[in-house]
Length: 150
Image 1 (cartoon, helix red, strand yellow):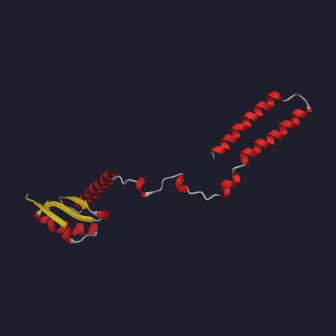
Image 2: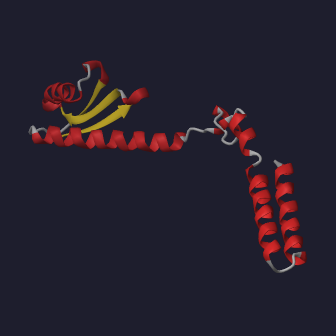
Image 3: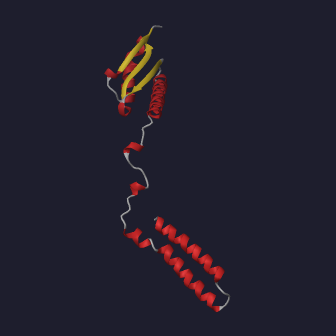
């Protein structure tokens, strides 16, 4: 590659000197044509070797796994937002069903529900638990009920 660049620099110098020393007239036209062909030849010279060479894209871009990092803080923020949203939606659903209950949803790996905390009166506990299981599609053992005394 450096040899090719040096050839182009040499051609530029040769063309410049030729232009300076070239006399006016018909001969100058032919000499300029020959020099132009030589410049095109020097510029196109490395193309066959580039086409026949195997090009490894990894030399231009680093695709190794060392160059990637997982942004765990961003993933945690998204998980917390999802938990909060699920808790708010479940609370709204329970209130829509006539219950005075508040829900907090906790997610584990793969966004699976690991626990639901329900805060409700003792009289609403069974119904709130049943509606939560129906709404989230979870088993009863993942629901923790905190009874509020009214």
